[in-house]
Image (cartoon, rainbow over all chains, first blue to last red; front, top):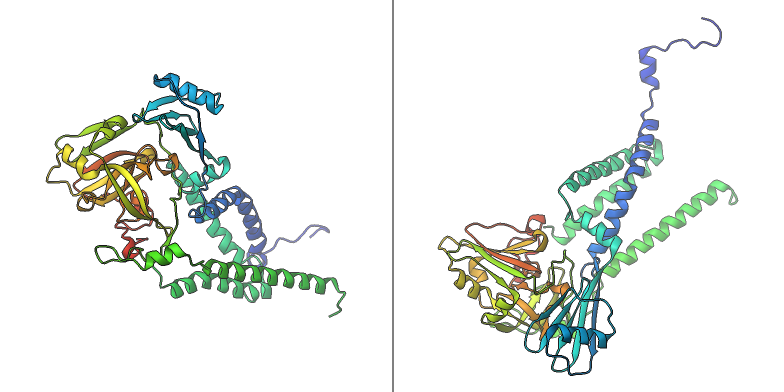
Length: 201
Length: 235
């Protein structure tokens, strides 16, 4: 064999020397990169939706009461225009609706003014979308098109891969032969203990 | 080990981080179990309904006003509003908002219970009973269930027997004011005997069906029946 040329290894040697961990770490890393965006979407939306009873994660609510001087013109459109002028609202309503003898509704895209034409009390109510969170929740709750189900399925598979590949990334006492196993067991025990203590479904 | 050894310092920093993280987790977990007791809830717990059940279902806490609870809003415009009453009926029909207001109205003080554990007691709802709409639509004998249809494909389902109870209505006013957008304006269903997701917001249709059709939340792990007194929150 000439100098500087490595002797071909036998199949058995190659098998013996094959180390899967660099491959696993590389895959874990790249799948992790790929999952960052979706993790942000699902995690932020999950936090937001978990606390639905404390706040509306999709919309900021508007509810105000105003009082305007009377009288208003008898014609609904003119009354609406006059009311808005007194409220200092410049934009035109998309609808002026006579809901009853005493109530005129001025409907805008984001809000509605309910005008009591006998007392001059105006109740303004509406909701303004929280742009990023609303989109994240829309995706998380799968309220969009069915195609998102496939994306979510892939993401779930990625998460499973990240979980299981993470178990085997480090050899020895810091891996599954030591603290890794202990921490993994604690993590797995959390849902089990919770189900047992809470009585389960 | 030398105390100024970088490895020792690293291990110490890691230990401090783990201790801090564990401490934070314990504090958060304990915090979630800490529930403030309040007078409204205490008073409601002491009351009993006419049917002998406690006024406040188990696991609920009384608050003073409805919370929005999200959902994909429908068109709040009363001028564009249409309510379709159809399915297992001989005389299906559609109503505009003004036509709905022209029907016999009911105003009732009702308790509603959200699956997320809040309850609002005695809010005054005004609207038209589902029984009134069913009568006008002339139900077929085959009708067994009612499916509330709402904006963006949201649905909820209850049995016909439950839907025809006098407290079940399509509501357009709450506590004397027009229904707010966040609560389903211009018209929503109100089904007080069940968890509140059954009371579909932004209601667009009432379909009478000869078979049960689990709705939006019912197909996502929530109870099909949803009785708050049995705590039927999840399937």
